[in-house]
Image (cartoon, rainbow, N blue to C red; front, side):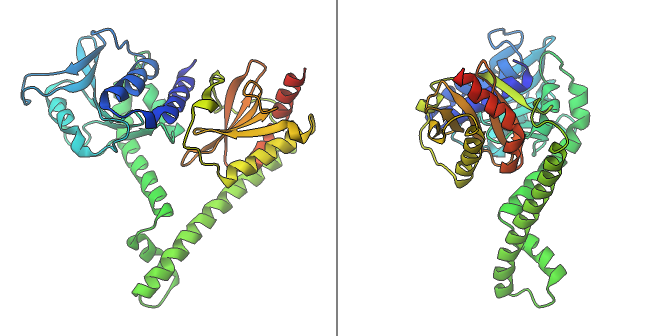
Length: 365
């Protein structure tokens, strides 16, 4: 598997197992050590590359240790502090990182709970770890624009200078994107007041605040939907002049072969209306090849599966709609290897109609 494939495989594992992990040690074993080894590419059993329970005696409190130090050429390059997966990350958790950052050669510090990885450096003051991360990797909602920068920290292509030079832009662009997402989801008074002042000449009273809070939230949702629909129209218009879905998009990622027991292991499942609508589209496409009653669905914790004959061994497609931002359609080749296609709306499922029909025909043969 390549870098992206390994990351998606780990993200899937975290999504499936997160609720079962209750301790910090279990989080390290299940999520963080695989991240260090399979994503960053360092040998966790080689003390020349990864030092667990790392300590430095100079200038720090006694008996305090950082969970992992990643070494290159005998020097500390990355410090990693871990918390259990069920615990949200706070800067207060990073006290050891702050102290060790100033007394080692490390330029990168990571605070993680196995699902979210906050990457820090020293942009604000030399040799002093910043209070805010320059990169936030959330395995429950992966921002694919960050992957090229994350790849620069891997053992194979380690390029610290390039990461540091891009860190300031990453820090502020990422923070702005997270703030925009937060405001679109739940606008605060300052955000509401900004737009109200542009369209309303009356006083910003409590009644006006209550009214425009709802209106601003509604307007932002409609604006996003309209932008998505415009992109869909452009994509669908382009598909009229080219054979649909003959090849996967360039930014598709491929997972490992289908794990047949995944659906049976998942619990606490919530089926959404959007998943059911997506299922109906896949079913409609498949019905050109088989009778409708043979196309079944099963929801899992991390994805919604469409199956032939309600058989786990015959997956037609998967709907990965549980992420906070990007949605994916999973299609399968003859070897049952899944390819994830980023989609921005249900209509884009039709772009992969030929692949879906081909999968159904393969099972019929």
